[in-house]
Image (tube, rainbow, N blue to C red):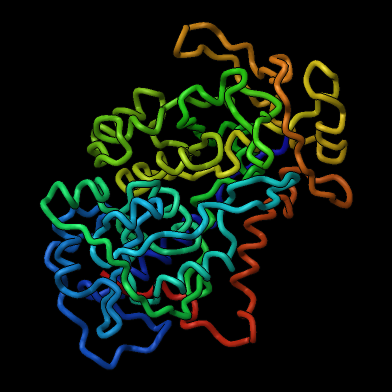
Amino acid sequence: MKKITLFRQGIVMLSMLLLAASLTFTGCGGSSDSYDEPSAAQTAPIAGQTQSVLIDAATLKGWVDSGLVNNDDDWEKVVILDVTSATTYAAGHIPGAQLWAGNSGIDRFDGPVLSGNMVLDGAAMDAALQSYGIDERTTVVFAGSGNPGRIYFMFRYWGFPKDRLKVLNGGKGAWTAAGYALTPIAPDVEPSTYSVRDLSFNPNVRAALNEFIIGVENDTVAPVNTLVNNTDKAGGTTGIFDPSGDYVIFQGLIEGGVNVGYANFYEGGSTTAPLKSVDELKTLLETNGVDGSKPIITYCRAGNAASYGFLPIDAALGWDVMVYDGSWSQWGSLTNETEAAFVPDASYALPALLSEWSTDVLVDQHKLENDGAFFPGPYYNINLGLTIEKPTFRIVEGALSPYDAGANSIEIEDREYFETLPEGGAPTSGSGGSGGGC
């Protein structure tokens, strides 16, 4: 088996670039050589502004009262994204907040297989940014009762640095608990022409299928299943594509992995509550054998619960962490088995040229939390009489290994998006800078 000396190349260079970018900021506003200096004087730093990703309700209230939300008149601007349902948003939201109506994921080929709920591509992300009026001077605040961690992860992936991303700790509940009013009025926002091409691509927060396979094979990563043992047990993971009612091929716990339920990262076990303290988060992970010495990869069924775990580790602890957005709906569908005891027929198994992508060989025997019984490695769901979802494999010329340069198809496509001009050939509003903001 080939060995890798670095799980992620370029992480040191990325850190240096972000540090250099951060030094260009002055107060709450900022300046950068990547776009024209504003003609108007920049405003003074906002009271309560913090370099932390997490902010409290009082800080956000100060930005609302100062007229920064959806501001098109001065240098500083704040856009609040309410990640929730349309019904909940219409019933009342933070003044100026916009409903995140974009997708949380799309269908994409990852390595050898079509997978659902994967990270948005460049075109989809640009459409979202522009519809919310986000530009180079915007600080984005995530403040919903849904799963803001999922959208925070995608902004991080597409290159928004942490100092331009804020999460209202405790969400809308923290806002109302502080005595602040909600409104049913949706703001009228001027669209922008901003693009992720104005940023610097940051794939270091996403674990692709091939990277996870390599990391597990070489014991260079720490897998954390944030759905506790749901993905371990027989019949635990339903298929991700329509029609519903089917299941992935096998279940188990990834080698070297641990179960840390995502609700444990939040006070009272509620994802709408504030995060636990830094010390409590460290204790939670260290008690489960995760100390931050290896890159952490969170996974679940389809990447959503994994994002609930990613947010506190990335935003509060600052540890090296990635979301495996393929999660068990992808991992549990890749096998070389061809016998009826494992799959309905041989067409459900990986083609011979893709055999190195088999993941059932990377499943541990371990003890289940609910009854203490040892789980004997991968359990094949067909033995329960369940309907199995058939994978859609990508046709490749010649053998494709996880170690091949072209194996990470999603991140290759997304990196290429940065290198192409937008439709019509017009330049974007910047040239790779990280911009400014609160």
